[in-house]
Amino acid sequence: MVTDTREQAPRDKAVQQLKKRRDFRGHLLVYVLVNGFLVVIWAITSDHGFFWPVFPMGAWGIGLVMNAWDVYWRRDITEEDIRREIRREDGPD
Image (cartoon, rainbow, N blue to C red; front, top):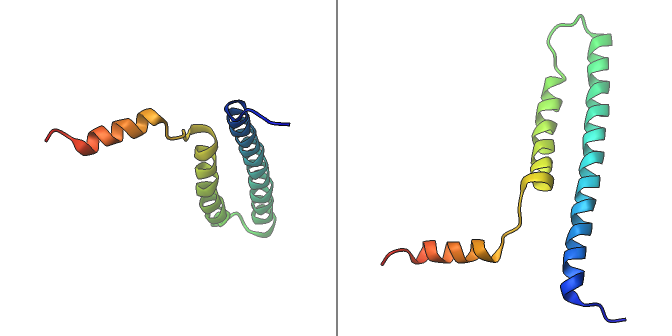
């Protein structure tokens, strides 16, 4: 069966985006569970002194934010973007 690439490309892109969203949700769930567990360990084992779970939460949180940016806010480069960059590079001579 021959598939029309004009129809297949948008479908492949949509499937890829859905997978990225699903993977992000899994990443977020693991982040919440693991860091929640670390907070529980901190609460049980310390006299509520220095909140050391802030270090893994902050470091991992940076990765989580970058993952969210990639999934929800980053856009693909379009032909218009390419033309605009070419015009900018050529500039007024």
